[in-house]
Image (cartoon, rainbow, N blue to C red; front, side):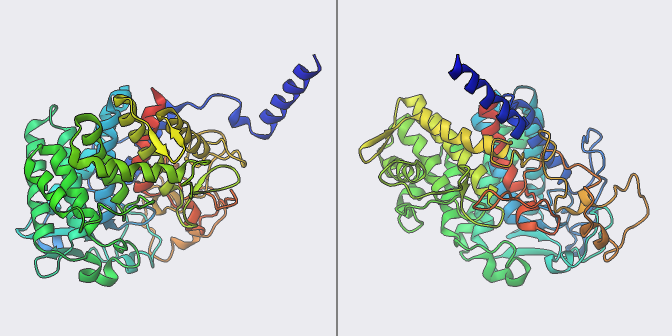
Length: 486
C-alpha cells in the first residue's frame, strides 16, 4: 500500500512539474502542424486554399532582374531570402518523408504532397529557365538581413544568383537534381506528366553538376557565405544526386556511376552528421536499402557504414560517441541544434524500417542493436522536441501548452498585412524585433533551433541561434512524425 502511495504521489508531482507529460503525445496533431508550417514560409502568389491566413502574396517579381520567372518557392527561415541549397534539401526531405511514410499520413498526405510541390515547382523553373544555367538564389542576404520587414513589404534587392559552366556549383545543382528526382517519385502515379518533367529536369541538372565541377561557395562567395556555405564540398551531393536518380529511374547508368565514383566521392568515409550541407550518411542509408532488400553485393559497403553511424548514436555500444544533453537530447552544435535532431530521427526510423522489413539487425561490437531499439531512440528525440524534456517546453510552435512565443521570424513577429495594411519600412520593423511581446502571428508547426547542451532555452526573438525556425528543421521531422502517428 505504501509503495502504491509513493507511486501515486510521484505521478502527481510529475503532472504538476510538467503538465504536458501527463497525457500521451498526439503525434497526428504534431504531424498536421509540422506540414502547416510550410504555408507560413511560402513565397509567391498564395493559393485560395492557403491555411496560414495571416500571410499574403510576396516576391511576385522575383526573377525579373534576369528576365526569368522565379516566383514561388520557400523562404528558408526567419528572413526573406530564397536560398537554393537549403530549399532543395528541404524539398528532397519532404519528398523522402512522403515516399517512406506517406501511407501513414492519412488525411495529411495531400497537404504533404502540396508542400513538396511548392518546392519542386520552383526548382523546376530555376532549372529550366535558361539553358546551362541553374538559378540558385533570390535576394541579397546582406541587404535583407539589414532590415526587419514582412515579406509582403520587402523592398531590398531581389537580385538573382545563378551557376553556369563558367561559375559552377555542383553541390547546389546535385542537391537540386536529388530534389527533382525524389519529387518525381512522389507524383509518379498521381500526376505522371508532371513527374516526367521533374525527372527529365533532374537528369539534366545532374549531368550539369557532374560535367562542370566546383563549389557554389567559390563561385558566388559572399552571396551565399557565411549563410549557406558548402562546408562539406560537393562530392557528397554528387553521390546523393546519383543515388536519387538511380532510385527514380532504376537506370543501371546511375548505379555504375555510384560504384565507379563512390570511393572518390566519399563512399568509404564514416561520417556522423546529416544536414542541408552534408549528405554522406543519408546517401549510405538510402543505398543500403538496395543491399538489404535486393542483396546487391556492390552496396554492402553502404550497409556497413550505415551500421557504424548507428553504433555511434546508441549509448552503451563499443562505438558510441554521440553527445546527449542531461535531458537526453542529441546535441551537435549551439546554433540550430534541432536540425540535427530531426534529421537524425528521420534516419533512425527509416533505417530501422529497412532493417525490420528484411529481418536484419546492427552489430556494434558485442552488442546487437535491433530495429525496435532504433525506433525507441528516435522516439525519445521526437518526444523531447514535443515537450518531454526537463523544461516541459514544446519546441514546436502551437503544440502543447508551453512553446516559444517570440520566434525569430520577420513575418510572424510583425503585424499581419491583413490587420496592418500600411507599409512597415525596413528600419521601422526593428521595434517589433526587440520587443518582449509575443509574436502577433502564430507560425504554427515551426520547430525552432532549440535548447543548448544543458537543456536551457531562451524564448527571446534576438536569440536567433535558439529561436529561429527553418524549413530544413521541419522537413525530416514530417517523416519521423508520420511514423509515430500511425
